[in-house]
Length: 330
Image (cartoon, rainbow, N blue to C red):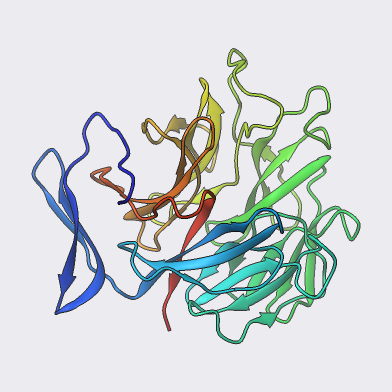
């Protein structure tokens, strides 16, 4: 049975059938007795699964929004991770046909059909983003290739290099109209460097106007060198804030900041640790990675944003189930 997240108040959530067919429907009531329903069967959730640790084999899975019909859509030896889906395009990095953990970018659909290599540029292990109706991507090349972000077209051709001026920059995210980029950055190049602290920054797509958005609390000493001060950013499509995970007060939680950096607040209040996540295109649902303090088990949950009701979609077949994103079926 799926694991249940402990909360001060967790309403009843149940799967349902629509028009005689299972349709990724989640229904429940919040504490005002308002009924909400997700009955859009056109989306699945794509996520990363640690399949075989001895052989360093990671795969990309998809599942319906009620947790049914889980399938391995990459099914390759080595490492495959997805950090981005746009419409019906599932983007993933893979080290197939190359050296171990030498990543290149591929594209497929929700069934894993006809995977296509996007670029011959070796990539860093970084999140990525798209703009202009999914005609351009922003990626982070491997440090041996380049030290800046690359904006490319869907054939992999370089459109523009974006220099941030920081020693460390990764996980780029187009925001707003695509003319600005939010990313994780630091004044020092390595996490173990004295004074290293990763924060969210925003910059114009021509490399001008660098501004720091987040400021990790100086009085919080619970974070270790390997913890995120500010994790990979995500854009809420209707409320227009940036969400991110941060290790504060001894656990990971989700926080938010607006684009001008004038407001920063805690988004969620779950007992479990909260990590990589993604917003549905309508902004009503949050797919979120949840795990215990010792990181012995990772799950994917789906939260109704208005009511904060949550359902766990995964079981304990696999330990690592991470990085959910919404993928449209064809």
